[in-house]
Length: 111
Image 1 (cartoon, one colour):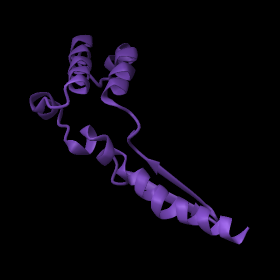
Image 2 (image 1 turned 30 degrees about the vertical axis):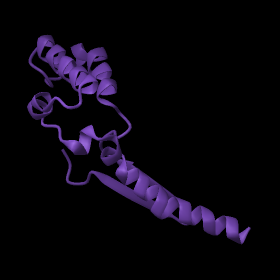
Image 3 (image 1 turned 60 degrees about the vertical axis):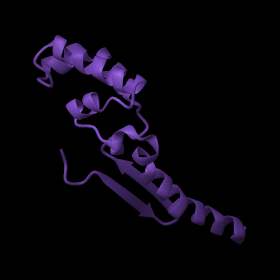
Image 4 (image 1 turned 135 degrees about the vertical axis):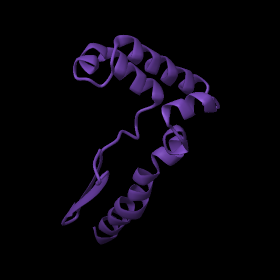
């Protein structure tokens, strides 16, 4: 819902990356969060009914258990950027390898 989805903030030797989404979450994690907050999500207008959210939770759990289910992935609008953990977390891995590890190595060499 924002044009900016990720940001790296650097100050001196410190660096921080923040993202709008949760690459650490599996579909099962997302399903559990939605299931635990069903009433609130309906009250806030994110779903028309509890049944709608129950169906979403069921789809997420199905896709977690059966990641090859293209029909469910298509219905939810999910592609490999969400479904493949390596792709979903690539930005963090790239940041760790490209920014954090080299800085740490330079500090270790200087010590």
